[in-house]
Amino acid sequence: MKLKLGLPKGSLQEATFALFARAGYSIKVDGRSYQPIVDDETLEPVLLRPQEIPLYVADGVIDAGLTGKDWIEDTGADLQEICELRYSKLTNNPIRIVLAVHQDSDIHSAADLAGKRLASEYVRLTQRYLDKHGVQAEVEFSWGADEVKVPTLVDAIVVNTETGNSLRAHNLRIVDTLLTSTTRFVASNQAWADPWKRERIESLQILLTGAMNASKLVGLKMNLPKASQSEILSILPALNTPTLSTLSDENWVAAEVILSEKEVRDLIPALKRAGATGLVEYPLNKVIY
Image (cartoon, rainbow, N blue to C red; front, side, top):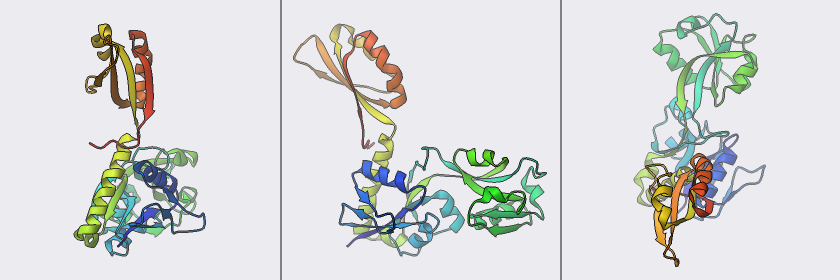
């Protein structure tokens, strides 16, 4: 038996493969292939557009997959959301689905969309937004490159943005945010009800969330003179209790702690000045809480 797993093809592909690598899975794919190879015979991965994954999962065509909350909401797919995996193509920040117009547009709120023309990949999500505000407007499906359509072809667009750079580059401004979205690990109701598949899905959840937890953390080892132990440890953040070990020299102890990369950057010089020695920073693959 195999677990059919949908992986997002396109902008999220490399970030997804990197996440799986930290979780312990090596995934390789030919540039022209949609059938990746993974070093786990219980998995059967397939590359799909993130937009397609929720419906394929809901229909039971694939057992589980990674897709955006935006596409789950847009399709209205009936599936199991297993966990949030907070990563994207550029940062670990969520993306926003926004209503955007040209800087010179007279559209400043949803009400101003009445009788206007909008373009978006998120047709259903956009229509529900208009219905919520009691506005009648024309919504057309867009195949992409939405930013260049405003204002010559359409009055407004609904697009996803991570940094806002593309919108600013095209002289567009954001009117409203429809949804904040992150990547979700999802499963079909049928797979979730199957004991073997559910166990595999839960194992993936543990490993993937562990990899996400570790993505911004590092381990830090150091040796401390006992005479200065309390003073040196007081420099560490209050919530991070180090593991202490004895050394062959009874005048020294070894300390080990997990911290964020940013914290370590600022702490290492302070720890060194306070008397810590043998400081070793090392990366982490998984942190399971």
